[in-house]
Image (cartoon, rainbow, N blue to C red):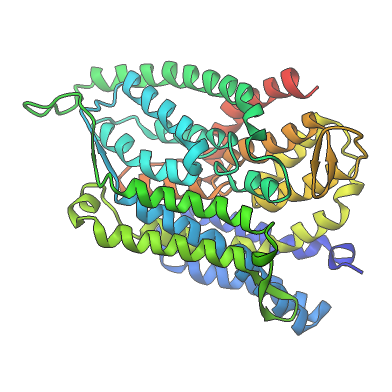
Length: 447
């Protein structure tokens, strides 16, 4: 019998505790949390692992933990690390004044870029010029919030490179360019959010100007955009290519094998090749780029370190929830596109959106569609696949932990002195501005 069929939801308590720690401790004991968050990660992880070992055996616990680390966490953090390094060596400069119009354009470009270099890559490339442009402004946290909504999430729906859930779909025989069908939905969401942002930012901008704040315009400066470290685009392409290559190689018999690690745990050769290429790209990027570029970007390792520490705890403690969903996903009675949209999205807001997407993709494959997209998990009606894809990609924006770039962008912004809302404070923004947009999506596309 599968573990998910017998596991109690009580095993999810450490995951809830992990989320509450991330939400509450930075508010009530910020400095203490900075020093001790790694210990909290260890404590909550052990509070899941020890009872799990007692219930199912130490060997099964060890195998489960190793599988989480080797096949989930390591590929996840290496991809983020590679993109973080390469993007940190690209400095986009220009006479960006932090005006509503300039911010609007930066958000627009970043959102469109996300579908082709990934939400993490686009976020890391675009967040620093956005922060520099608004360095003189007092009211700017809302700009970073809408950046997370658009660049770090919604823009990633166009290709499998854009967001990991779609890549998993591609690896399960969903056609590579199928996700371009989501373009009308993305454009609608982008248009609504950018218009709302522009109105909101215009009001904030006028208040900043009324208080005597103004950007520093350097003598002789122009509006010409200058990119330092532009050769790093090669390494960015290497990383994107490695991600695509991994999906392609997994279907070629010669590369379909894996390296045995322990018990039932193994690492696919296609994944190994992907990770090696990413690390090589990161190494070459750091070696071939002048330190001055990173200084100009205020580059530091703090953001990636914070993500690395917190997400290992999140990956470990959310495992029982994923096991439960894998076993019971087909019993949830989700037969309509709008149900799949909200179910996938709600869980993607708190769980890793990649396994959540796979759970509901598999569920959709069991519904008996006679025509549609033929995948490795069965034939899926196009509208159902659209609903699952949009839910997984879009609603990762609902919380800081819904998608890894969210946390990285927040960390970079805070290290540059921008006061970002708390975990629940950010959710207040997402409920206010995103949920109405998602209701519109449901009414127009998924009913």
